Length: 622
Image 1: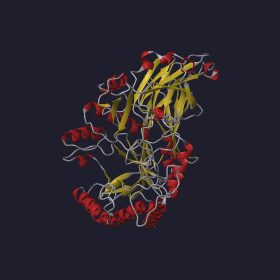
Image 2: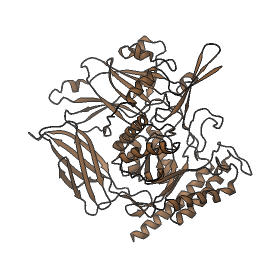
Image 3: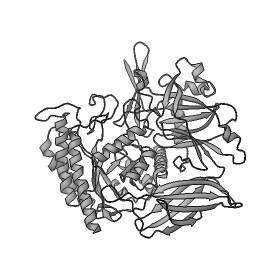
Image 4: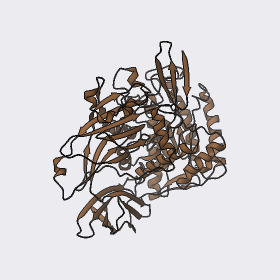
């Protein structure tokens, strides 16, 4: 058996992606969340799509042979149906489908509704919108390519020129191959067997399964000829409110824009123009759980024709008045100290993998509240937009993370892709009061000047200052530490001394920067028990959490720690590994959301912290 390790794989996928990576400029633009109202029409294309899987690591057979021009369900015996949204990996018992590396194809027909065809007076423009496709997508309409997108977990869209009174063929080619030139990265191996067959092996540089396909909803948006392209809202704890509106086209005569601010059914402000500002007296602030009510306002933006006052477009965006600041190395929300207690999480569930599921999302957030938590990090990619709106509504604080996990390669081409993803992430989530920080990477391999020079321009894009060390590039220091697990397995009594020393060293070196422990914990196989406790038992997981949180409590009371996030909320799937027994079991819940012993311990710990936060907040209010 011969194993060939290929860092740069010479197939059509690499050639296509490389052509994008080495462009001098990326075109990233803001995309508002899909909304149906009195002007905008939204059609869901979720459902069963025709699905064809190419041989692993093929040369792009479908692209070479123009599959986008064919009816895949008629032309191919291996064509089947697959649900959208969902990862395709776990939808059969076939190992080849679960571990597929390379191209897959989605296809369906779409008829433009006759009500839109007949409405010539107010003819709308149509856009094909994707919530997330992992990892690389080429989109076709009636056999012609209309656009490409690199990177999962973020939305993109392309305008459609639809045929009337005839079926339109929508085709999507998706490739999940990872390399040192993708974000997140991975290694790609070809194993040549004596039989002449080949095994294609993909090893991600991260500890979760590389679920692939169309992972979030597909929609067609029907928008007016002139429409609202973006809304930026800045609202602080003093009631100051400013906005800026972006229209899709530059016009010689600007349309009239009316912005109405609602609190409930009450109008609290009325403004005009592409940009403006005002102050709301006694604004009801957005507060995290335990600190008050997460009050939300609505900004209603209406676009009128300058000539005759006809309503051209309307969009309603929720937002909250809140400020985030740093004082003496601690996080303040609305000038009150905020202590984070929550989890690292994953969008992961049985059968559909990372595919968006409203029922799972709501159950997770309900369990999150049952556990008395108040914050989470979107490890290790931005979660769905629906979830961000729910976090706003529930008062859950969020650190949103770009998909840059496990970076090992630091060069200019990858930095451009990284910066593009950060831009798309911030453009998407900038108006959410729940989002208090942006995480630009998780556990990159820091290696000297190359990594420092890599991160400096990325952080500078968003206004961060760079000083002598890489930690000085960031506003907040987030640490992942596993004392008692990866460091000192079984040495539970050594946790306090080791962890306390390290965190105190960070505090003395960076006294002005908030410190978060964003990962800690241990694996527990559900139902595995042993006394005295042993690694992988539920008892051992509880003891690790107990010893670690004792250190956190000491530092919290001293004002030296800003937050603690347990890894993980629930068990999740990973790539095969001798250190992983059908996935990662560091969750306090099983993958199907049943509580382990640790869930009850952390519920008590977070319940105490939640009550402390309530007590301190209302004491200060009095």
